[in-house]
Length: 587
Ligand SMILES: Cc1cc2nc3c(=O)[nH]c(=O)nc-3n(C[C@H](O)[C@H](O)[C@H](O)COP(=O)(O)OP(=O)(O)OC[C@H]3O[C@@H](n4cnc5c(N)ncnc54)[C@H](O)[C@@H]3O)c2cc1C
Image (cartoon, rainbow, N blue to C red; front, top):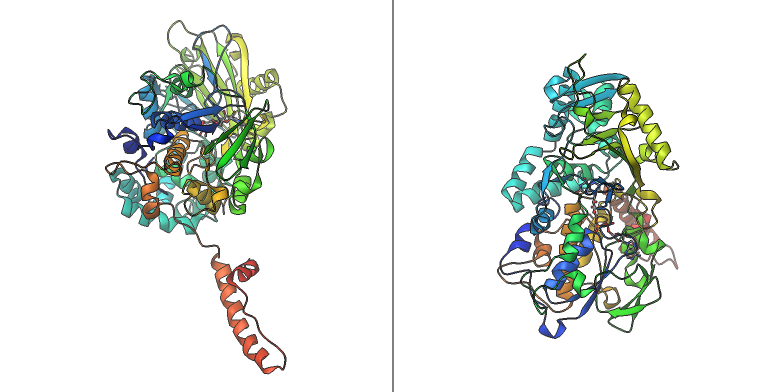
């Protein structure tokens, strides 16, 4: 995922033989607080440890965060992927850590892929069975074609070519042109107003929303900022995805235990686990400034430690709900961005089954008895996981977002299973899925968990400025001293929320920021993100919007007229207001 907002080669930076940089020897062994043991916290902690610092990781809930692989009771290695489960191969920094740990991956059984075998699409009560797109009626090909054409209206191929070639200049020129044009507009607006879809029926749009591209239905994202969708397709997030055999949670847990090679300061064999005597500290309850350059971090049990730098990787709303965070640590502009971050809801429900029975052939039709299923019914997406011979299979009965996830929110796990089975029985009237279930089902609603409050960021129109502020926060030289030393990273800070790669990239930005803050520097042959940020960083959009600019021009013209008029009146003095005051008038 190279750019498009910040086309920095994170993968090259972390694999360069010169390493990420150096910290002054006098600071070696210094403690750095890392709030959250998800992938972004642990990647940052791991790299900071390699630079010779001593990360102190705090975790309020379960290590791994939203890479959570919950084991089914009694079945070793059979898991339900409650968070991230399919990782596009374009996630090159993410895969650097997967490969470092020697984890096995295999193709994810997405709709219409070889890994899925067969796919069933059930819309408006009609069921279609297919192995590839070509097996489906022309309507589906028309939708796929319209989507490809619509993307060409914003120069999709040219942008992808620039990404592939890592042609920063062309990529920036093309992308920076799209940002102001599309920040205010939704995904639905894009689809509805595109030339390609305008000439087709409403039903084409509906089908696109239900079936989408790559991974399945995208209508839950229709209200999101179109920029977010552009990033997903342009960086190939939605293609060529793999799962981690045995569960994605092995990545954060593996990083925690991994004896890091080529460490500054620490003896060979040191790992995050060994620096922590095996376990992270408890959740953080308070962060405050103490003295000029120390940040005091208090955990849930009242223990307070002081640090020059603190990295916060939990979801940003938690800084106002779970953590008493001193207001002066961030500017009000940053607070607005942290609090306006908008989360998407998501629910998943899994069952373990005695065997991958869905591969049985129906003698009547010659088809698989059950398939990866996309539907407009309650379940939306049903995924089938074959764990190999002699192993129980796993069915993700339902993976849904937004309104569909909220329908499940108040229901306990058994009822969720029953609701899902009921919906699936309409599609597969002859298949008795329940008779195959073994063990207890597993479910999640991320929005119901006080340590998350939502699944992942889904930026709304007009949110580019908030994203840009949060993303650029690791560049702190221009900030007043009282706001320096606290860093943010993770899915909320990322340009590609809901994709772990984006979270990893933000944690690498934070590593650069912390290194810089502590007087360190990168190797001249391996510049880091902060070294090139001024040149290729995300563009800033002006405070004044198009209409604002126009009304401001009218205002100044009127001000000029009033001013001349005012001068004519005895005792009247026209005072020209500051641009800031004018900004307040702009809609
Ligand atoms: C349902 C779902 C599906 C997803 N699917 C995919 C996918 O298929 N592919 C993909 O690439 N990505 C996917 N993602 C996104 C991916 O999981 C995230 O981008 C990534 O895991 C985020 O990591 P993080 O470290 O930024 O945040 P988190 O994993 O949320 O880590 C933050 C940690 O902070 C902890 N915390 C909270 N409060 C405190 C406190 N007060 N003190 C200390 N710790 C605290 C939390 O418990 C958590 O462990 C999915 C996410 C979800 C939820």
